[in-house]
Image (cartoon, rainbow, N blue to C red; front, side, top):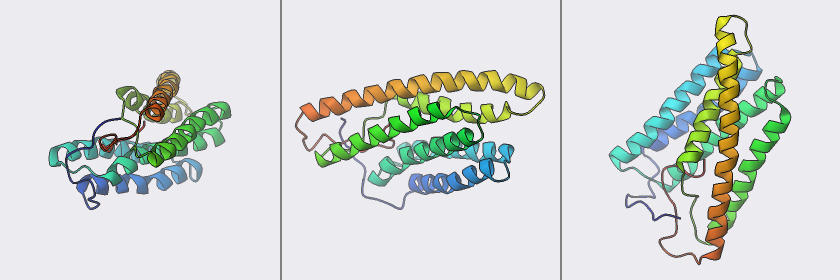
Length: 206
């Protein structure tokens, strides 16, 4: 676990947090577009806006020094919700097999339970790894490509194999990063928590 950021971590009204809330508001819209009118193009636009604001809020947090405990929890939570919404929708539409949905959701449920245990021992969220970020990136790019691949035409013929490749690599990295977070969890349980043991950074387990 890493040390806390030196910035004021109890602030709620920050620009990065506002962007995270904006991303959060896009989750139900994204899910409705996929399952209601099945407006896949607009769903991809919502996902792209969410990805851009995800990058932007992290950038602004560093530039403005506006780190917060709320941001440390909200930012990865919104990523999880987008992935969950996409998995459920693609499972219902039979684009992604349900066993894959179950495996990825189970990974997040296990890590969520670990975070609750760590908090009781005085730790913050998991330290973000680049592997976890890469896995999230691959999955969030795989979903729109898989959607585009369901149509007919030359675009679909190109999008589908790329979507499958992104999904396979993203799933593999997502599960591997989950094992790395579990290793952090075991190490934390073996180490007494101290004042500098929290990991309140922009991000969290990805």
